[in-house]
Image (cartoon, rainbow, N blue to C red):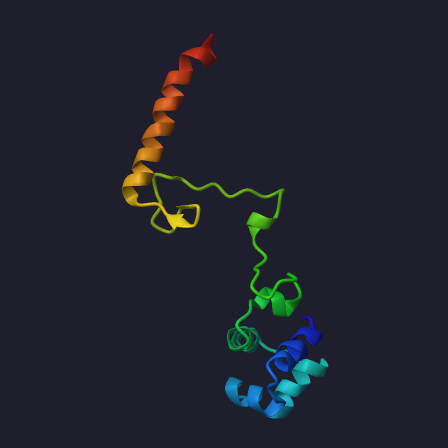
Length: 125
């Protein structure tokens, strides 16, 4: 955990230790212990701090350098995630920041299938 980040986030907002600890529902000495490194916060406390400071848990933990960034698999070049476009209940696809409708996704799938069919004779030659 990057202890300097907690203090920097608090000082950027001109918040006192007492104010932050009150917002988090903990004793001032507990939060001060997190900033000083004397105490290690629970996952719940880290999550509450990220919410309070409007930043990511990853930023507080020192995993990323931008306050709004998250460390995820999309940042890793060596790991890929496979998404089946025929089963998108848990995903949202977007192009240029605009979500694709179900109809657009169906059209995209149909396009890919048609393209593959057209290319198939060329592949077998």
